[in-house]
Each structure stands twice: as structure tokens, then as C-alpha cells.
Length: 252
Image (tube, rainbow, N blue to C red; front, side, top):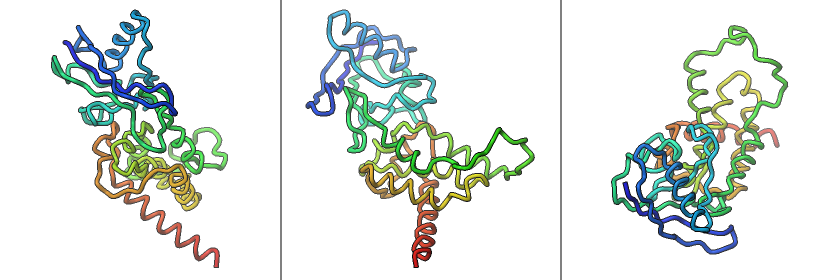
């Protein structure tokens, strides 16, 4: 199949960027999207041109590194699919594909399709952990956890921190990410003692990083490659309200 790529090229965060058109000819439909970019880059290198810079690591839909927007949709048109797991057979011969980095003030462009998502790391560092020594893994029946609680925690923990939720939101909100990272701990016995502090600190870190507010339009969950539910945002809002009231009364 033959495709036309319109790729965002930008030398660094301080340089202006622009869309540059490339031909991607004789692409195997069974290639992944990143393998297609590999082929295009090999051809660019053979012509002594700079290859397209893009993030990748595991290429198994686990690490969340392959952040890119394809025709205006973070991770592309297939639901619950990362760019690295998106195959070219989902496109048609002759298609024009516009490929851009995730757009958000808190995700400055590093180069081409690569953005700096270290703001997510700072949010997790502010509270996305259990600070007490937990030792080695306990025997499964030592601390009984109801099945529905464990499953909800696992649903939240499936977030890979890719940033698609931010890129899809018109406000560049990180609420779905923060809600998932807080909820994976807040419902479990190990995470409850620090729940209030965790929620307050993680939301404060999110605001400090420059992410926008959530207006509940659910673009975030629609593009999430792990189908994280917007219900976690509602849960975070409730927990934040309770924690804020407790903090206010504690100061009196």
C-alpha cells in the first residue's frame, strides 16, 4: 500500500515546527505503525536526511512511550490500541495521514513527535506510592481484599501513563491519569492511611504542572488505550472534597 504522511518536524522546543510531507510506498499492511515509520526513516537516512524522531520502547502496548496523534486522534483510530499495536491494515491505500506530537503546555515538544512527559513523573512522585515499608509480598490470605475492590484497583493500575487523555482533552486535563494513579492505591488497605494526603498532593502537583481543568466531556476515556473509565475521575473528586474539608478543620 502507498500512503502520504504529513509529519510534524521540529528541531527542539524552542524552534518553530511545521508539517512536512513524505511518501510511504510499498508498505506491508501487516506492519505496525511504528514499523512503517522505521521503514520511512531508513529511506530518509539513505538519502542523508534526518530521520523522524519518535518515542518507543516495548512496542507491546505496555510502556506508553509511543505517544503520537494520527489524524487528530491520540494513538490513532482504533479504540483501546496504542500506536505500536496499531497495524497498517486499518488504513486504506492512498490515505493521507497527519502525524503530530501530543499537544499540551505541560508536554513541551522535545523533537518532532517526542514530548517531555516528566510532569507525569512529578505527579506520581508527589503521592502515587505507599511510603511505609511493606516488606516482601505477603501470603495471599493474610490480608483479605474483596474481589470487587481488587478488580477495581487493577482496572485503575492498568493506566500506562501515555498521556493520550491529556492530548484528547480540550483543556489538556490530566484528571484521568491522576484519578487512575490515586485510585489504584486508595481503595486498598495498604493505601488507605495516606489517602487524603495522596489526593491533595497529587492534585496540587497536577495544577502546578500546568494541566487544565476537567469539564467532563469524556474525550479522555474515549482515547485511552487501556479503557480507563471516567468513573475514576468522579471518585477522585469525591475524595478530594472530603480531604479538603478534613484539612480545613484540622487547621482550626
